[in-house]
Length: 120
Image (tube, rainbow, N blue to C red; front, side):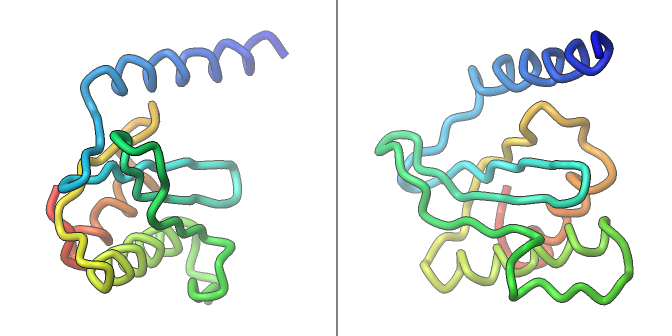
């Protein structure tokens, strides 16, 4: 169990280090990513006001689960989040990977958001 706690604490430390530099403002929101073992979620956050404007998860009804894997689900979450953000007039964001390495599902979500029209 000690190995699991160390791994989680390392991620939290990386996230804190990252959050010193990444800050979402009113004109450029923070796209925050959380990854669990089975699902992934993303939120658009305005840190200056302390509110979440938009959130989407792979558990949402809009995300189609066609059995193609977690990476494809992550890409769909990114695409749908970008589409919903554009409907609200949000075009520019700051990407917050949440202390996770930028590969796999996190990278796939970012690529989907970029393909959907968000500018990082």
